[in-house]
Amino acid sequence: MAASTHTVTNQAPPLVGYDVFAADRALVEAVDRHLDPELLQEAREELSSLGRTTGSAQVQEWGALANENPPKLRTHDRYGNRIDEVEFHPAWHRLLGKGVSAGLTSAWTRPGGHLRRAAGFVIWTQAEAGNGCPLSMTHAAVPALRTDPALAAEWVPRLTSAVYDQELRPASQKAGALFGMGMTEKQGGSDVRANTTEARPLAEDGTYALTGHKWFCSAPMSDGFLVLAQAPGGLTCFLVPRVLEDGTRNVFRIQRLKDKLGNRSNASSEVEFDGTWARRVGDEGRGVRTIIEMVAATRLDCVLGSASLMRQAVAQAIHHSTYREAFGGRLVDKPLMRNVLADLALESEAATTLAMRLAAAYDDGSEQERAFLRLAVPAAKYWVTKRCTPVAVEALECLGGNGYVEESGMPRLLRESPLNSIWEGAGNVQALDVLRALQREPGALDAYLREVGLARGADHRLDGAIKNLLTELADLDGIEARARRLVERIALVLQGSLLVRYAPPEVADAFCASRLGGDWGTGFGTLPHSLDLATVVERARPVA
Image 1 (cartoon, rainbow, N blue to C red):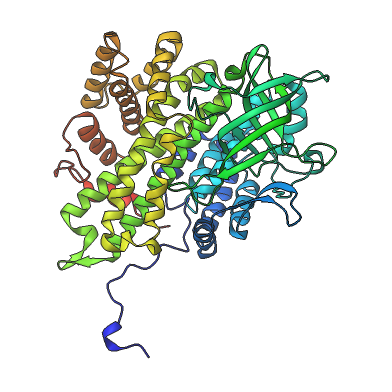
Image 2: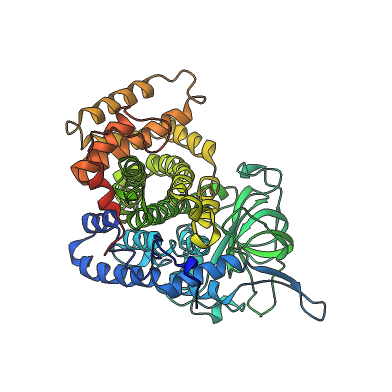
């Protein structure tokens, strides 16, 4: 019998056994808004099913186990044969298998696929973000492979399959396959044109032998990889299969797994190629051009991943504050805590609304929407991913000492939070990419301005922000040094426009007053006290 001094009171119950989709009003409304009405009922049922699975005690336990038991590298078998295999905890395979079966790699092959997948990605990665990497790489490889019809016919059906097959064997013998990516090298990082991996042509047309290394190779347990190497005609994209058609292992020497700050359930590696067999994807010398669509897709997944993490962090903070009492009442009812929670909720909803708008543009596929994505994706990747860490820190603080303890799950969110800002090009890379779009593709700016202009006249603070942005864009003096400031404004104006058009008035008013109107401090919880903050917090409360 427990001692009377150990009676547990005033503790929030675990946030478990709920529908992660239905509890996220901003996400539900985005799906309703952007998806074809004929697809809506099926999509809602599909996403609610995934939401209930994500919120279940079992899947939350899988996420914790996968994080607590990171992958292990097995370079050799017991007899000394080189095998270069990565061993994962069973919970990892369960998570990844469910992500594949839920359609998180099949956006390209079904109506409304990008929006449905984006919503599913936001939901599912709240259980454990690590399995999002192989899901993202596999999804994003499709447009690059489609530059070669023969390769696409062979590989795309496997990558978009709902079957998860973890065994290493020839891809032709598998009903489903996963893809990874290897671009960066020690000496270059994001400057992939500095790559030194050599591609030597073989006798069979389109085949090469690769020699070199990759400093970061994502998802090394995958069935195939897109890599960049220097062919006689310049930097070129290649497909490297993990297992060759005769059943032998391709030369794919995993030197070590990265010991990362977060994302610990997922394997990131350093690999060496030594006569590694590869097939060319696209033309020689056009490697960046070939792989750029893959990069754009993974950058959108970085936005989705950060929106997912922010949503989970805010949900935990509001849930805790709803049940925790202090100073004579519930924390959620205290004016200062309500200000903090509302501020966090605004950041989360703005991220989700923007991410889903981008996903809808992929489904549309029109020339105007492609031009819009050219500017909006790197701007969103820059801004949303950078907002993730401060949101995670503040949400953790809402739980006090409880949030600093591993069992709360908040430290895992915090360690994960910087990742998406770094992967697929860190902040400066994104800012410079926005400048390239502005300077080389005038249609991108036109499409962006047309989008934000849809809300013009609805809020004077948004109108003022658009005017100020146009002034910034008209002044090209010192543009590179001002790139971060400019991209931040581009992202905030876009978020403000979307919220003014689609969010409840209380949310749009608070966002415009703080993010665009300048009535905001440097930390969360500094919103104008005259706003309807209780409504903003209640909207974000995870109940369904």
